[in-house]
Image (spheres, rainbow, N blue to C red):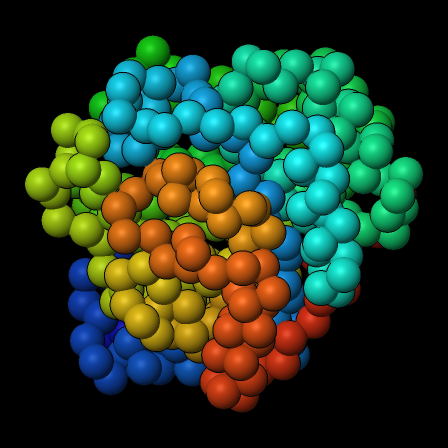
Length: 350
């Protein structure tokens, strides 16, 4: 098997056999990696051009009922400094985002029972009433079909729910008392209801193999999400994985490029986690095919408290600073910022 021909096949057909994807991951070197990135870049230029979409991120609660082994806001972490933003504080973040030009808000939090369907519907409705043209993305974990439907009817447009890993054994290892099957059911429910959905996974989890990563790629190809969040595993000091090796920019950008080639129309963030392990991490993600960034709109008083992993960047920056900094970085890489809704190009607005 020739790695360059295999990458060409992936570029031309936007598909590959499992064995071919494993072959690419097992045999990638400096030259073939450069070729892979070049093909991923060409693919994103054909679909989205040199545009990078900005979303305003609002991390509104760090309470969580789950105990994901790698996560700094897991329920059993007694050292976490917990907070919840009030509805008024969330609306102030949305106001600030609108002033900065954002047309998408990402409401992200732990699985916090305080934020019932009624509370979430109120938040969504109030934002939509004030900013009807702006998109609302939710990232608040697993809920019932009925819950997702209520929030969709209230005006939520998109939902991010990383599948975390497509290998059942790994999923159960890192997500105690959670169901691998239910995670997938939630994603299918969200798609059925009409959300633009986002899945995704971490790169470099302890014990993760290339076969596991290919499981992720094959699952994503089958699911066809509108968005996909991929970032490196970064250990947190208050978890049992605190001494484990972090994932790398190299491996993460490889996975970003492969996802771009498999799903040419996907919206693909270059994550804060990438920028946290490498000063130029987000730029490298964009060069690998990513086309979304999410500057933080949360009050600086709570930024450090939303600590999923150690070493998170931009916790002290005001929202305007975040936006300006990221825009300058994107411009320097030869791309341009777009603050519109930035829907998936195959999406028809309701």
